[in-house]
Length: 271
Image (cartoon, rainbow, N blue to C red):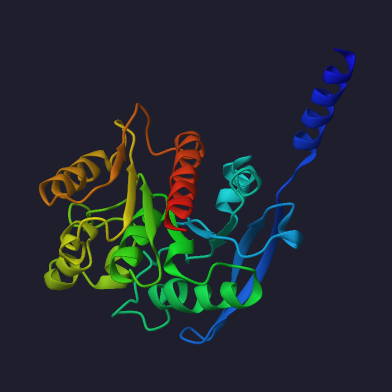
């Protein structure tokens, strides 16, 4: 009995000392002609690993590449628990992850879906296929993750959103979106074509693994509920989560655990 107890203590000590490795790199964007920072989280056994799947995790409006690591402390443990790489790029203060038709210096669709993925695949031991890539994010980043995944299904196999701005049209004066698209009054076609809820024609059943999460007290709850209903109407399989909570970091710190587990399950099923 004593030997078993000692063994169990050893196992607990081993797992408690495991720690994900957090690093910050700079990736050059040819389209924007500048270096962009990204936080990279790898498992502590990365050196001995072969090819690993990657989750791209996007921040929200007014945030940066450090938001997730600074404000959702502990989430990085998933890199060890699920044996994956997490990439948190800087998406600009208010890019909404579009290639802006108004501001030629804001090309974050090109950066995240192309330049960043290529750089990560070059520098790290990744699965260089859509079956090994997923993307998710919060708020502006939730919009960005679905927007990029819907438009680049050759790049990403799974996508998610936490409290995402999945329909921008009810908020024409908010969060600098007019600076990226022009005003809704003057450029209604742009807004209609670049809001996630109007892009469901790009999907076929099971073309993407999709998970959506939004708190019932969130100001984006109604648009997320509408997206859920539209996906049901089109017979697009997806996971939909809603529980009490608002547009807050405590909500996202909890939500991201479910998102990463969903992505890990996708990776394992896609092998």
